[in-house]
Length: 351
Ligand code: CP3
Image (cartoon, rainbow, N blue to C red):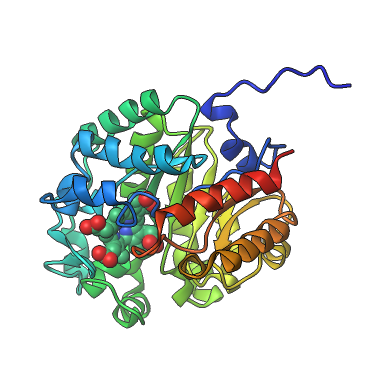
């Protein structure tokens, strides 16, 4: 007979934080990368007439857009509505987010001098962020808020390519040709990412996710020597702030163990590697997040149901499992399907 009272519900004791630490949970927590965004009609309505990077700096809009998917889907975490290029924009780099394209940099970083001319991110420019996070934490009650930043490598790809890219050839060429300037660039991006994360945690965020979305274009050897130390520097920059650290990239099957070694409590996995195999690669010291293929949500409900069940089953091999997609929600996704996935994961995993 159990006489234990229900667990207190605070963000620090939420299923998300507990799964991230490998502690027992009431139900497997679920959230979706890009849950706040174009799959929601209420998001499109609120965003009408405001540029993306303007919206990201407006505490009222950030608060409301961040809350929308929590209200609608009953997800177990909110993720701050922002963008990975925002720290660069706040520092003064001329970047625009072109709808349907992504971030476009007016003057890409192509020379050693360009690296040294980049402005630093001054923490006192982040008041809007602290305001939004404090409001969100007050509104969210027991639901944790995940803060995030872009990892140095992925931010470097935008700065060097000037925009989205498939091969990231210019980035790699710069990395090989100018190793010292590369190190300085990634060092500086790590400092700015850490500043951005500290501002969110100090205002009350309960976990952080470092997005290294495009790290999967690198070999394990290059990732390990030329990138990982800088991602680790971001996490180290959190000091003794006691929040779980989630680290995610796309196409990182060959890098999963290293992504963990960069300092993650939770390794995010895309849809290419099943979670039981990912657990083997990452080892028993870390939890996993993922990894339903976002395209599955565009299929029929029976397929969605089957694939959710598979991911939940394979996730049982991990120390802890945070259910998510293998990458962001696609804009054409029916929001009703997202709500149904949350309900199904909760039903399948109720302890
Ligand atoms: O997950 C969430 O709901 C939080 C919000 C969030 C956004 N961007 C909002 C956004 C997060 C965590 C990001 C991070 C981000 N931004 C990443 C890392 C995550 C990943 O997807 O790998 C990257 C690579 C970016 C850069 C970026 N910003 C891209 C590629 C795009 C899409 C361009 C397009 O229009 O298709 C953006 C714009 C963006 N960021 C949108 C949203 C909601 C769409 C802009 C709009 O609605 O007008």
